[in-house]
Amino acid sequence: MKSDLEENPAFENSGCENLGHGIYCVDARYIQHGIACCYLMVEGDQVAIIETGTAHTAEGIAEALAELELPKESVRYIIPTHVHLDHAGGAGLLMQQYPEAQMLVHPRGARHMVNPTQLIAGSKAVYGDEKFAQFYGELIPVPKERVISVEDGEKYELNGRALEFRHTPGHAEHHFCVWDSVSEGWFSGDTFGISYHEMGADLASDRSDRFIIPTTSPVQFDPDKLLASIDLMMSYNPKKFYLTHYSVLENPESHADLLRAQIEDYRQIGQLLRNESEREERIHQALQDITLARLSSEQPNLDLDTMEKVLAMDLELNAQGLDVWLSKQEQKETSA
Ligand SMILES: [Zn+2]
Image (cartoon, rainbow, N blue to C red):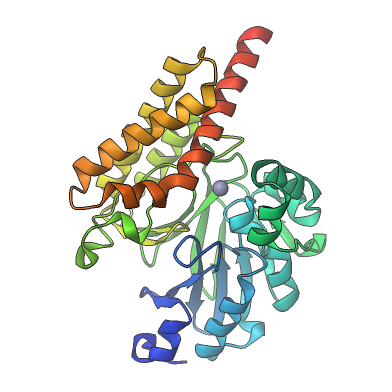
């Protein structure tokens, strides 16, 4: 196995980054480069793949493993943090390609991996048929006997390296995050927000000084649970967050504070606009305004027109998710 991938220029082109501690970031080829990633964790001759991307992701993972000179049989675990399709859509294909692997998944996500019918319908409702096909491709069911439901607090070992799984609702009820005590880092899926490379002005401080936003996409956003999950993760005194959107982030305290403040903003915006007509559009506008205002005070060197484009899809999804949360609140009130 090669110890330093950064010396191989061909490998850099394939979109795989060596982050140290046996952790490699592989671009998921989702929509465009830099939107979503997967991680390979390599411990000796064993590999865990954390996040699966979509049907378009497997090729990049195969290339990365080939470059590391690791055979198919080295892949022991395939671990989607939750069953949203940019995280779990490629799971079935990867399980076909890596016959020795078991899938570790949240108990509330397991049945959707075995039978993805509901996931497909849910995602088509958000994106429409055409974008669905383009973004995700084909979803392949995972054989039931290879799926392990992981309870909160359970640990699994990769060649002796302990991975601890904590249930982290708030973005989704079927979400867990994975704690790696070697890197003192969390594989945080969508629970610790979104921070694209473009959201930092200075590449030299890219890992510690990037703007971050929460992701509250439909249909299970819950601000109280999301805040509690962030507190839970911060209680481990992490040094790193391995985000799915996108790559590693250091300096967790300041990012956690930014996320907490914005989740409170979201709650307040929701409560303020709950009785408005065209509520979702109003929420969308308010989220855009407040996000760009925060961003310009945190990162004054960034161009706001560019940032508006970078954040457009996520803020639209966040507005939809906040709107769904308000509808659920209303249902609770009328049934109480
Ligand atoms: Zn998600």
